[in-house]
Image 1 (cartoon, helix red, strand yellow):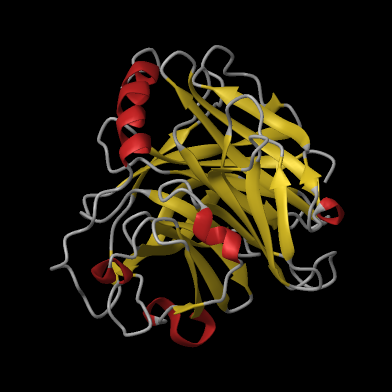
Image 2 (cartoon, rainbow, N blue to C red):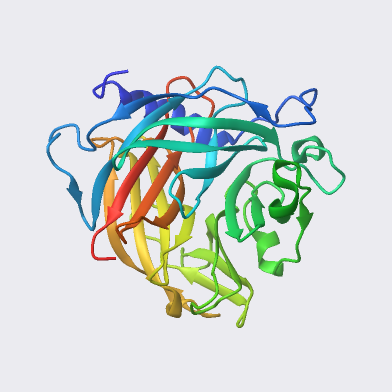
Length: 341
């Protein structure tokens, strides 16, 4: 689809998908082992349609991207994302309860393809796929070494996996959550998760932010789970943006990925940077805007963000989009360097 047509198509299908939520997957699909799949990748050489030579966007420098596609029926709907410290191996998940892992292939610092890709259903504590018990809309992913945390939006659950031991066959165990999580809207619940590593403020804390669960002042409800100072806080909501994912930088900052959508304004992407030290029970936090982009740029329904530091010491952001399993949208992977970090 040409850039001229894409905004109108995305606006139409996005309204339907974002308002209705993901459909329940068919229950008969239940493989016992991960399935190797082929992912085709087409390069995204520039980020701005009108100015292909431009590479600096706010505090970010564009480092290329890929349009991803696969004939495998369960590919798509990707939300949370983790990229390993090597910058190559990655793990993601789909709205319909499947893991996706693989390896990003590079030519220099530009991604050129995906190798070693495989998918598997996300399993619950009884070994059955999560969606067989109605636990779908798996939207968010946080990583603590070999432990994974997955947020399930529809049922307001976070489940923990011993990925280091069992890999994609790990079984998720629900963790205790603050009472306020249960009050979130059913389709606008925990959309962003990030785990704070050792050596940083709030080390050991799981930061959870709602997509569109609002307090009386219209700000996003958020939670500090575990760690040294658990409690509730809020994130200042502005310009109709909702939260879709979060990640922690090596410098000890929370990056909040946000999405905007309306018929009149189309879709938008924004990333804010919030110091971890600002996250406290009862706090209202805001942050510096690193980038704000609309459909004049190479974006889609961006729902996953990961951060790693490359061999040159640069902080690299990797973003992935949720195509809502709609052929008029795209699964895209974008890479940026955070300038000055």
